[in-house]
Image 1 (cartoon, one colour):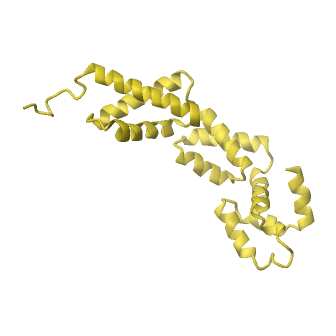
Image 2: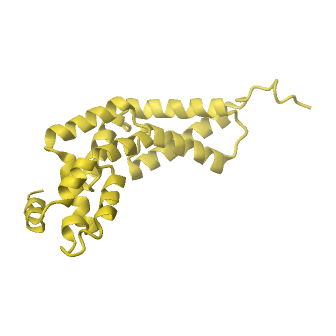
Image 3: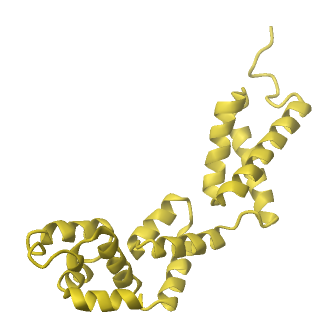
Length: 192
């Protein structure tokens, strides 16, 4: 009988190389398809290992293998959290996300606070008042606020305010947009 504790957990070099190669191939495929952040690729590889390979290796060894793969991918410019943060922030802004919601979304993807801060500063430098523009996009997309008929606007004011608040916009911005006349709104939305 072998004692599992006394055995070297990576006893077979061929198994170790095969696992590393398989995980690296999975990482390349995932990067090709999704362009993920470092944290997303780490999570993906760990889930794939647990689901697909169902090996008996110690978690510390697997995380070390995955970490080495990620460092190698980063060194070869396949992964770059700074570029990921910038492109994802711009994409979310085009979809009408507030700066708060963009920040929270990037944080949930595993992007560090420094990259988030730099990405948001780039957005603020490129566009004047990005939250106001995004709130207008939400109003147009959801057909709320100035997009409603004049008779329904007072009835749905609280609901519209809640929609904008849940989208991450401040009370001042929400109030400013919801008080706009339809003609003024239509003129501004054409500029954006």
